[in-house]
Length: 360
Image: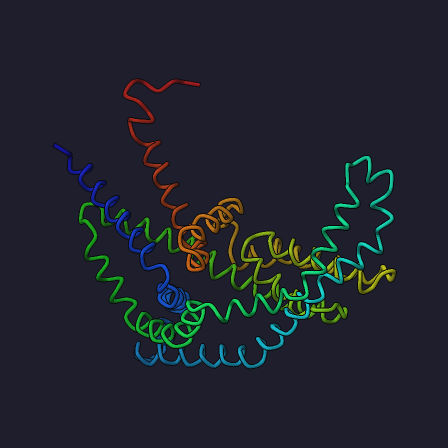
């Protein structure tokens, strides 16, 4: 006979397994629902604020959705075409940039230091030549594959049409849904589950909302400064670096590497411009580490970069693109649950034993 605690554990593990199976089965249609839930989760504090100012919940959700729709339409009309054009030009021009780099530093590949380090100059030249010969069609192939894939078109249409409705209804009924879930909690453990839920909400909301704002501000900073320097594709590189900074250090690393390659080809031998690019990313890293993250996220809710990267790989493997969207919030939630489990384990007799504690 199983004890009450064992039955409860079996019930929750079975429920979790069922949820995972359903997510895998329906992963191809989850995108608008995940996006709608993410928008509702991020925006429900704004709806609460408007409700406290006298608006009904229906009117508050409608007002937020209207503002969000205007912002998205403005971005689609003003910014997306420019960024797509810059991306196509960058992909088409990248082989040429690599070729010019090889021509500029080709002598270094044949130097004594290169041979001492085991660098095969001929292999590098062959790889660059192959990439150059095939790289002209990269942009066309990439953009074409995005638009010709059947599910890609369905995802885009569903995001534009279905997601706003899901966001609206979830925003409108947010508190009722939370109350219904609360009534379903086992009464003996209800308070403990509520405490765990509050901890998860604190970690996820602080990190996700804060990191999104950090990425937005960094992207604007990088884009403005790189465009001011005159770096080719500065707007695309700057905004991309800001978006990628959602994962700590990734935005800085990718943006800096691409910017330096383009700056060397574009400005060499005018080295002050290279220093200007280095200065932009150095200032951006200092802003992120010492001003933006401490003020917008807080030092006590940061997630380890290795855990974030593992979450992206794991959920991306399980659920594809949808998994990438939910990886960070779920990774943060799982981290909180694991810490809770470790605390319970360290407080149990399984860890402490039944005999007297050793004195160290």
